[in-house]
Length: 156
Image 1 (cartoon, rainbow, N blue to C red):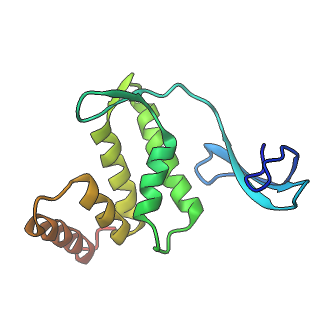
Image 2: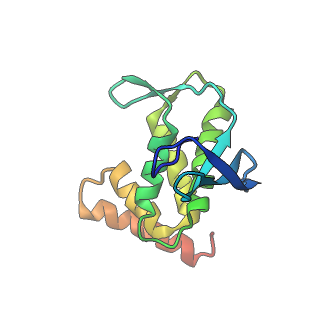
């Protein structure tokens, strides 16, 4: 494993544990050259379905794209990195469990929204505002009112 700082491949594992979802192993490593510590995740390599975009283009599943979208939505919010990683794993598992050879990008977006709705309201609204590309402020306000009603109704 290469150190992200000095690019040397000599490192030692300082700590190793299973993630909360059990799908991967989180390892804390220390570079033997520069002494910096970094985290890696080890998971089983499975064949993922192709993603069908809105314009019918196909592209390979990209876990990093999903992670980047969730991270961006959670930016400056009190959502720990491990919780974000768990959400990415839940979305990935949902796609895997579908058993399909192809999955619509909209299905991935809906899975991300479902995870974010449980994590953080602001992150959910941020992602939804980009994903659903609201046409006007009224449509955006209706979405906010729906979330607010669900929260007041004790649904969580």
